[in-house]
Length: 173
Image (cartoon, rainbow, N blue to C red; front, top):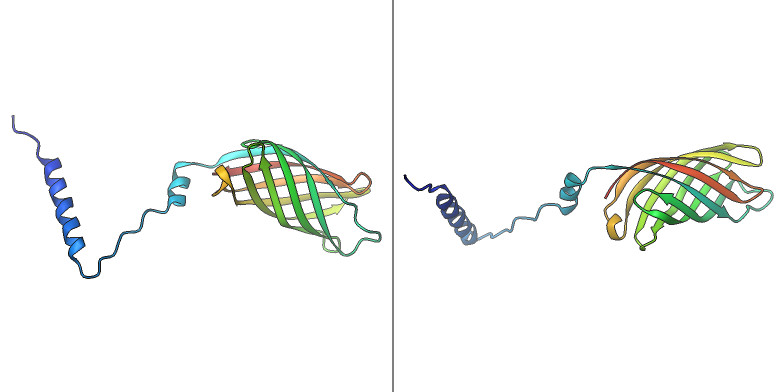
């Protein structure tokens, strides 16, 4: 039986190619594959869901047209577990819109998931009902390259200065 010589031929061709590449006067190196693109190709998106409870400082009366609101609270989110929430957002009462300035979810181990959101709000008794689209934009630890989106639905009370909302979407990290 005749031995199979293909691996030896491939090694010889690869070595000769490397030798020729090294002899070029304009010796350029080949860039490593984009680690983020490879990671996303391996890790498919997963559902993320949960609920959050927050408190905030009451707005001044009468409220200005745009309120800068700071929320702090706790969430229970898939992939993070019990999570600390910190959010700074501008709420435009005249147009019924809201935009986050900063939004972080901090897992118990200290990993941070960062997000931005935009949404709408409508009067709801002594508060508002709101909905928003949240986009995950990285973070720290396992969430360093996180991407994804989630829908937020909730209510805020200006009597108790609390808000609660649900999160439902997808995440890749």
